[in-house]
Amino acid sequence: MPTQAYRTRFAPSPTGFLHVGHAYAVMQLEQWATKHDGEILLRIEDIDATRCRPQWIPAIQQDLKHLGFEWHGDIHQQSQHLKSYQQAIQHLRDMNVIYPCFCTRKKIKNAVQSQIKTQTQMSSIDLFDAYPQTCRHLNTQEQQKRMSSERFAWRLNCEKAAAIIHQPIQWAEQTKIHTVNIQHIGDVILARKDIGTSYHIAVVVDDAIQGITHVIRGDDLSSSTPVHVLLQKLLGLPTPIYQHHALLCHRDGQRLAKSQQSIHLRHLFEAGLSSQSLRDFLHHCDGVWSFPADTSAKYITQQLGS
Ligand code: GLU
Image (cartoon, rainbow, N blue to C red; front, side, top):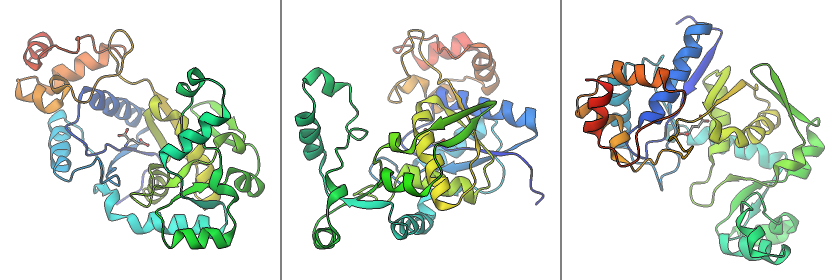
């Protein structure tokens, strides 16, 4: 199989039927691939057993085929690669840049609350960005003792990472170079208590395994990019070029609700919508899904064309 110079991926999670926002994202990838003669790989991001269900995987494949999306090569399913993620976590342990964290959400909330003055401030702070580093300062003996009896997550020690990696970290978003100070990344969770890994670890390892040169994804994930670039530097992996596109939204800028059945590709196709009509609409819609949330799949199909 000849290898192409440029490669990206579409990486849905099997938490339900794909919707029109996914179709919009696929079309951004296809446009990029046409322009750069690149390949698009398909990855199923199913490490989160609390949200993902295997039965959605064939449904995703069927709807993508119906949409006319052709991916390159075999499907990469994250749940088949848990060992690689564990190896990456072990590597970070060996470098001493992660530490076990025993805190519960409640404990973190209370600690953050006591550090800040008002409730109003609290609501605007993301609990995990605001982690008060409680477990960072446990000594090795205490860590060992608690690890044998308590559930724990692994967190990045961003100070230690900053001492190893050349500051600041940089990456390219198309023609723009982004720069972030490692300490500003915070002590993010790199292995969750419940699943033993995290989106951040899995995505970085997979982008390297799959030889991804360009990550093209929704801008809801742009805040994760500094974490990914730092992990690539720590693990000695290449940093792809990043490109974040706006998500398909309602007229008022609200995100589409995944629970809304009438935007599921499956329901629209069943109502008779042709993939070409959907593609034509999405191509010209300027990122706006102009149908109110309570519109039926049948009405959408009548408007867009069967
Ligand atoms: N699985 C993620 C999603 O469904 C995409 C992750 C990525 O592209 O990095 O939004």
